[in-house]
Length: 97
Image 1 (spheres, rainbow, N blue to C red):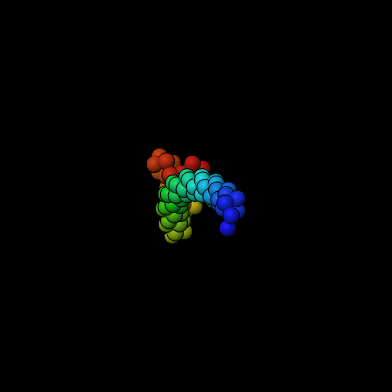
Image 2: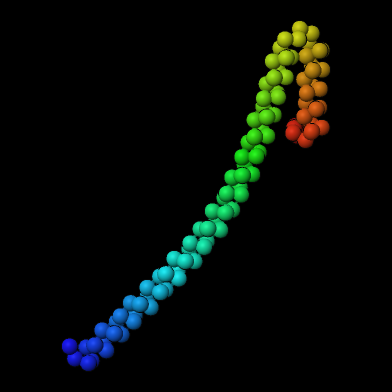
């Protein structure tokens, strides 16, 4: 192998090395972006789980209130019972309706 061939091969290897470094840098930036997105989604997931638990709790309360109301024979008493349940949920901030 001649000196000029070695120099040419060295230049090609430097170009490949430079491209590899650029690729690594680009992949590191993508990784950082994905890690930030992952953190954001994890926080959102926690928030949605909390909201889901609140909704399940409210659903259970309302279902129990309906079961009790069905057992009450007087329509006015049923209405008062359900109104009181809704009022209590509003007071605790669990029901916005």
